[in-house]
Image (tube, rainbow, N blue to C red; front, side):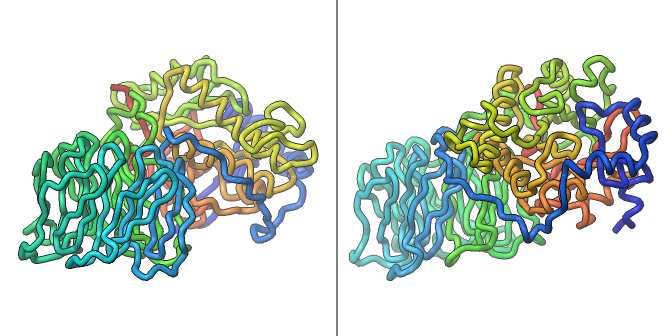
Length: 563
């Protein structure tokens, strides 16, 4: 662990945990700042920020959930108590919260994302949203515990599977065979259908994969020295491959299924209960029994239960989502260097870093909300050149109450006195404006960084500042984009009271490139609770950034590259 004075060098900005905002950062500005001195800077910033409040005193107002079109990514977690918990573009399904005679064992999602089926251990089927009931085993005699449900391609039927290998078809689901009566060394844990709906796979806990109908066999971990039982399976969108997941976080790939990472065993606090592919097949979600969600490849993080769940999570279902942009189709499997640079409008005239960078991060705005980096297209081409990873950031600031961007938006039409409503609208509209400019410029990345710095406009009310960031994070999530925060611990505490949002950190202000790797693992640098993913060193000519282990392990979840 680094001593505090090695985090930030002795300079007026750094003593306060500050850096000049990216839109004004330059060598001339840093010389001017040094001439001002700490006392002058504090006298300028202090009245704007007002008295600091403790994190426990924050009371961020929760606004009604936004309507999210089903074309955006989303997933649902099902618990054995019968609850279906939605995240992202997922239907809000009211669950029984206990009281079922038999526990829920599996979940499947409708193609629209607006509903789901859950199945209980005795073969009962529960529906929500636009999912329709086509029958169940109910009191029908059968052997084994029902462990899986899979819908047909039309959504007008489904299959159930039992631990003994029985398969039961309902609606327009056709029966293609089962393992009923076979002598299995371990029980069946999953049934998944082919994209055509004319076949399915069964997976057993010891790694066996069994094919029926038009399901192809692409391999299995059966016979390998598994360290944990197989608990879940999901097919690739093409149907020419599949992933298997084990209770200890192992991910096994077969056919055209790519490996994008696995949960770090040290971060697992409960067994893996489910795995679900992203729409593109370039990523997947892994869910654990305590409600944790781990994302890999282009699968965005849209939330989790944070360990607060009634019962145990038994599965994850994901189906819809916008098509992955072309820029993401060749996401980097690894970075050619752990070091990269970030640029924005100041570099439009000063030039760009030369070759050798592992990644480039480009500012979409020119330092404030509702503004545009005039050379975004040129800088994005630089960031994606020669297979480099490319990311983006956007500046945030507090609402200017009463303005057009504040009064109307996803939070509704606000009253003049309703400051939380206006705050949410302004931040959501800031992201909407940046998304439109990025799309028009051909810029698409799986993760956006939110620049939170004191020298932009902020409210003396820390709860409203925290709500600004929360709204930006949620708006990006609704578009299938992960969010991270660029700031320093002191700036974050000053502006938000130190609120924890469980999103990745881009730490600003390491003393130099050599100490940056150590900052990745220093708990003091993790001011949001989401882990340190990038560390920025104080610049000489260009900002230099170091990629921490989460980025190095799964760069495709952060960066895009050109085909």
